[in-house]
Image 1: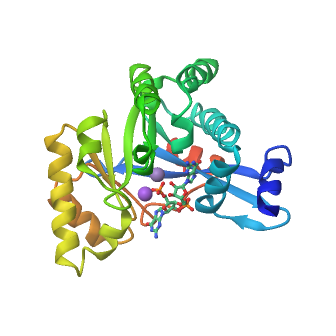
Image 2 (image 1 turned 135 degrees about the vertical axis):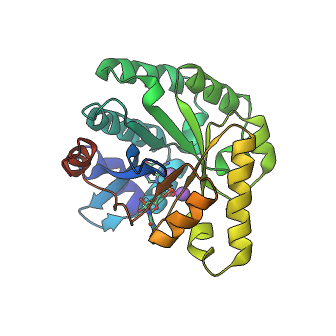
Length: 250
Ligand code: G
Ligand code: G
Ligand code: MN
Ligand code: NA
């Protein structure tokens, strides 16, 4: 409850920020995208993880405001990068339940002159758990505007192949728990290989998350994975550091 009250004041107190983690093309080894990840440095509670404060925002009606702030901030920073580098933003299930989301995002994109085709929107499987026509229409609207839709953390939570069939995803991100265990666990390795093949069969790009070792990149390359992300390349970076890296000076 106290946390909720502090979160309600986080924007005006300037306690929220956005950091950026690079996503690398596995064949060219170039940065193709940065994922925006939000951070909250609370005066009272210290660093609160997004896993925690996003959940609070969702339950307390703050998600719309916070989601929009994060989007605006990430866009502002990304608009300084070279045009071939994309921006990926995580969206909460709650944000999709709002019909006006597409229009507002389009307005914000137009304001900074950011091509919607450079935008990727990451959604988790929980988005579909209570999905309805509004969720679907919002997703179709964002896609029609030019953005790509990404299934995040694939393989965990309420994984359902019907979501891949019924919603227009452009990309799948394989959850890092499968990558972590694939060195020693044959089942994880078989799942990673199969999800890559499945994604490709559906015409989707496949990204692997949580890469911490070179051997994991080699394994994923042999499996034809498209993109990789993880601490081996970089931790999430400040806007300034991401800009340096995007421009090749980082
Ligand atoms: O950055 P970190 O690993 O702490 O993120 C933890 C979780 O919080 C991840 O699942 C990530 O997708 C989620 N997350 C981070 N920033 C945002 C955000 O701005 N919006 C939403 N909906 N989720 C976010
Ligand atoms: O769920 P989502 O993929 O949006 O979460 C991204 C989170 O994963 C970020 O909070 C980031 O800090 C974390 N992360 C990114 N790369 C790595 C990694 O190589 N190892 C681990 N353990 N976590 C990572
Ligand atoms: Mn994500
Ligand atoms: Na993830």
